[in-house]
Length: 531
Image (cartoon, rainbow, N blue to C red; front, side):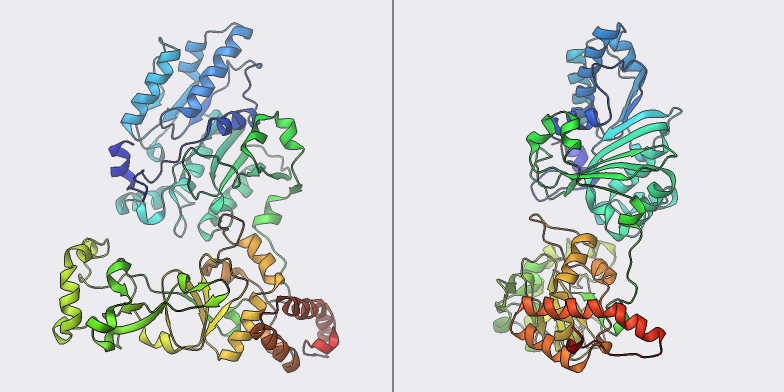
């Protein structure tokens, strides 16, 4: 792996660079088939752009197909490749390897349109019939802050905490010719996350999404990564088609002709219907009902600020029992005795370490590691945490939702723990109201919503995150009758998902009747006796 790319984007845990996820050759071939860039066709007049070519996995297959086409239609493949194939690569070492591979098959090729530059700052005087590739994946926090500021001025889709690949979509779509085709294999997070909102709107307004292929279940990349891949085909056409969607379960399916895969398309959807609109009449958001949604504390150095051994060495006043995802597994809450060291006083100010010799001696021992954290390099006091701790949160009743969880049970903490950064929480009312809400959240009604609006972990389980929790729509809890509330809470305590689903389904079936009753001036609570 090139050290230059690591300098540009940072290093992943496996030693590779952020941004580097290499595409399987089978996927590359399928994408070119989907674009109808086929060797049996005359490819001499088709212009192609690859925005982040890496070592050339896409370009090599394009070259191979172009040579085959030239033998049928009698054109010079070197001249056509030189004239019509364009690419960018920010890492000069990778581009050099790409060019060497291309020249080993086409020795006289001159790479005049293969540029060593940041594609997001590139400018072209041509439009392209095809844009294809696998854009780099770089999370918002790993993008250089100076570049972030430049990107925000240049790209309308750089919204919220957007990943770098969102900008690759926008910039490459700018160069798509009329009736041109754009095909990326990329993480599907932009389809559901808040940060993809403006990209979805851009495509909906100005382009047409023709195909969307879920490739999460196959090994689409050479490395094992949690990328949640999807293949999208976007066309620059005025006619709006309905999206063809499919889920590919095995890599070998992509070896078949495209007609075979098309038979597997389950549904045809309208882009706006899927991603922009939803019918939530008669339902409310969680925060609209007096609850608050938050996330636990991030320290920036968990191995230093979180430990089971703190009670023996650090002042009790600075310790909070910490609950994390590892404590909530197997449908049980089993606290493993870990504490977080809280360096803040009740007013949110950093403590004077000299007043706490145990904490002072412990932290000084790890001072070099603590100071190496990103937040310290941005003028924060060396022992500050990423997030300030609010000690009172420990004592609040709250629903605990692990970011990634396979549990069918949702836990309510009556006020014993402080949540870690991998726990989302809901607070703001009594334990009983939280248990009622937890029962609703355990229902199939909510799980179906989550499957549509949330990110999913491998295996298809939805992830609890604040952005998806805020999108959920549920019945107004205050309008559920006391009898039904009590039955839902009893079902919650008994972990009886069947009873919860029965009760929630009954409530939902009565919403229509309630609307009609309101029109007639008669408002009734939603009751089990109406089911």
